[in-house]
Amino acid sequence: MIKQTLIFTKMQGAGNDFILFDNRGVKMTEKELSNLAPALCNRKFGVGADGIIALQFDETKEADLVMLYKNPDGSDAGMCGNGARCFAAFAATLGSPNKFTFRVHEKVYRASVKKRSVVIYFPLETSVIEETVANEAILNIYTNTEHIVCPTQTHLLDEEQDLVARGRYLRNHPKFSPKGTNVNFVAGVDKNTLCLQTYERGVEDLTLACGTGAIASALGWHHLQQASAGSFKFKIKVKGGTLTVHFSFDTETKTYNNIKLEGPAAFVFEGQFYL
Image 1: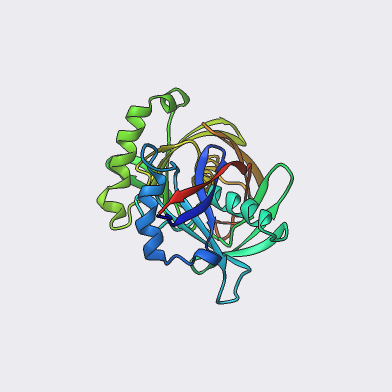
Image 2 (image 1 turned 90 degrees about the horizontal axis):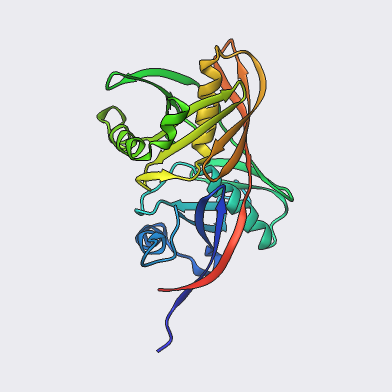
């Protein structure tokens, strides 16, 4: 009996790990991807990952490629920044130029694959909204997916059981219903550097890195420092490494734009998954 197999590539970006495959030949539907994700991402019975990513052509011709991303529970994500960097590096190995465009849902992103890092240009203009949830002051920041930022003290970032409990509570709070949100716990190191732990929706746990969370945290940390105008580069220290967020801020409109996420994208291994 010959089993049908899926050829995949395992990659990680600052410890955020993904299973990628070329869907141009396999042609799995989004429903099939959602059904497959829990089995593939299971770290005991599958390959193990924070999400799966399928690459395919953009039939709408709006971009060169399409990135289809599914969380480990099969749910959809608005955007995954670390996954996008891995996607870009993966596409380059399949013959894509080092600079190209790709679509996630209705938004078109630009990618630049360098020797030691990958840069993703976000089609995004956003702002920081101060809110109070369960008597806790938080910052609500949309980065093409839902995020909140919770300032905390550096030593509390090591209290991971507490972070998981707080993250789960806030992620599921009625304030953010029905989609829920990703929860970022941040502690400043200096003016342009901060440490981050993210509780990711769909993973339902802390991850070693979160790209869109790093963007939200950088903008939130800038906001907390009275938000001066100009262009900035912030270093975000996560458990899996360091990410760099570039952005500009306009004091008149109080909006952030020219947002770029830069960081590593590493190949781990290739394999075949028995379907």
